[in-house]
Length: 280
Ligand code: NDP
Image 1 (tube, protein in one colour):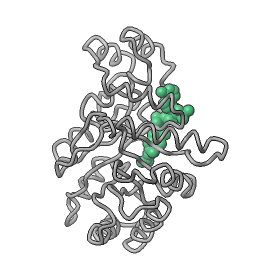
Image 2 (cartoon, rainbow, N blue to C red; image 1 turned 60 degrees about the vertical axis):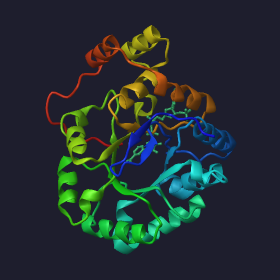
Image 3 (cartoon, rainbow, N blue to C red; image 1 turned 45 degrees about the vertical axis):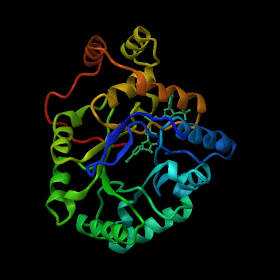
Image 4 (cartoon, protein in one colour; image 1 turned 90 degrees about the vertical axis):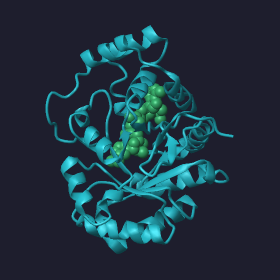
């Protein structure tokens, strides 16, 4: 009975919620655990059904929290996790995924990503993803923190053009991908998923953002998220607070008029040339 939070399409045509939920730093403080679980469940109820986690987060603690929060509602969610680069040879990728499945209490992931590029050749990770797809343990695979050069290299490998997603840093204060990676992904039909879409809270106090939000009767977080969503990029804000989750959900219905976009361009200029892909 989840609401719809707007959708975007994966390359195979499957529609996923445009606004999802991140989980970095969730599950690390026992005193906050119940509130974090409530926040994740509320987000799913509100249609923020893409849930992004990783074996890295809290050394598995975030995945365990997600598993607990999603018990009984696994099928309402599009579940994403990531393999650490150090684990990302063929066998290691399979073993890491099996560890994630165990902590998450599920038999399959909807999307499995290489967290960032490390010492293993991309062929190795791709072979692991292929094994996992054939075993029915993952439904899609993709990458994270790959720039255009990395995506081009991946796309030239046999089967490498089947990457569903590149998950990268993108928000008002980090617009470099607009120059090259975003157009490249559109052309190649790779879905872009924005992480840290509110810059971990650091942009929320910028005066120009606050002014735009006030003029629209919205909050800075809602404007920042609506801005990311405006061009078909998915966003996965993280919140362990039900009030913030409800607020963030409001971004889906927020239309940004031209004057608002112009004011935001002024305060957060688009890239004027190629910019190395940043990561957090
Ligand atoms: P976000 O930009 O999502 O910001 C999260 C912070 O903002 C938290 O401190 C949260 O606190 C606060 N916050 C959330 N909503 C609001 C609100 N409405 N008003 C005020 N504060 C708010 O940063 P993240 O780095 O967490 O990025 C999101 C997700 O992306 C991660 O959790 C992770 O899943 C993924 N990620 C992936 C990376 C990769 O390499 N692939 C790297 C970084 C992130 P509170 O809990 O109190 O609401």
